[in-house]
Image (cartoon, rainbow, N blue to C red; front, top):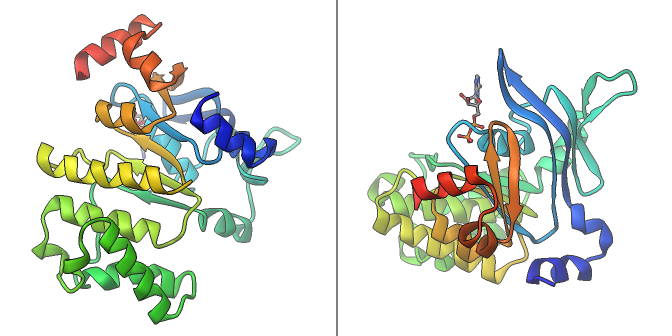
Length: 268
Ligand code: ADP
């Protein structure tokens, strides 16, 4: 039994499919981006989505953030539907209140860190906990300082984003995401805009996050070493389908599909 499945087992059988995509399809015009896709992710599991550009990986994350709606199929987080099929076959989004509740448990870090440029680092991290979660300023600041220490930026609380390197800004973005106490952290190519050295700093921080919390992580990345170190499972996408899913050692060392072998040769 892997570490992930034992963690899931401790939390009870329901959590084994904490995030569930069932028969999800999405097209933009004639472009079929997701093709009747089904998969699930256990609570506390770290899953990396790999595959060629345009294969639908980011679309998955954006649907979980309710930034995009599937054309058909259902998405569930825990016991809550984000989108579900009605009996007549049409797709209904869950109610606004319901979506807010689910969305409150999920945060995403983007390739472009999107910090508030006019706010100091500390305020970047406390803004949403105060205004969205309703935390007191003191409580939010205490937690923000802890998180900024964790990402190695305890001495930068008073800096403005423009005074930080790209890697430092991305680490603030990670602290900001964690300040929402999410159950699920979505990471979308968080190091692709960075030089290798700065990317390594960010990946180190994420390794620490993975080690020290039981947060469920879905990560789209081309950083294969990170995928190998951190993930419990790697999903290989091609043309809107998952063509191979396995623990990292298996997928990187003994990929079964020729398409996976070719893709890995092109990125490693
Ligand atoms: P990946 O993350 O694997 O690179 P994406 O999920 O970003 O792939 O994109 C999958 C496909 O969907 C691509 O062909 C992309 O051009 C297309 N796509 C994504 N978003 C939109 C959009 N808003 N409008 C039209 N096409 C889109």
